Image 1 (cartoon, rainbow, N blue to C red):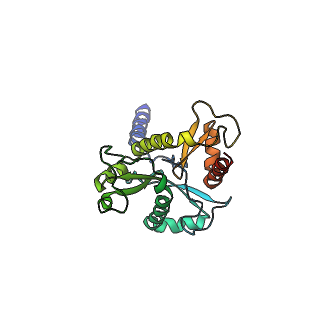
Image 2 (tube, one colour):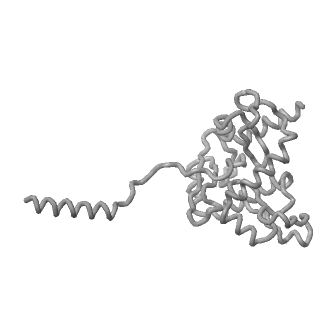
Length: 227
């Protein structure tokens, strides 16, 4: 009897060691980069209202897409997006490039700092590449550097954030937090929305502001007009 129990126990251990499929998880993927910078749904083009739906893209094979935040006006648009993701991301990327190109902070390639980006409109500029990773415009001198950005977008975004903050901090119009009106600390919680610097007293306030990027930027613009 004891021998039979031992054999059964051993068989159970072998089964457990083989492992069962992990239980499904509902953990929300971590966002890579910045909040969705457009005020409209990527599918319908309608303004994003209070009932907007936020989706973090999951794509283990494509680091340039994995973790990117996209916002929709409704659940139905998510299904349409998923059926033709490439099409809708291409349209969104074009809109982001159009908004951010004029304030892009680097005159050189983000991968090869010694390579100056050719002036737009020239024959040489045809080699330049504009890629959107983490909802942020990143520019490179060539297709090879573009591929490097897509393979490791986190490193490129870190360089871009440092450059953008350095370029805009001197002219930032507010000394107080947009959300709670507290004085900005010596080291504010900084973020980029549509390529523009916005500063907060803490990460909680930053997270609240990123829920409605269009409103946040409007408040910054209003403050700039007062100065």
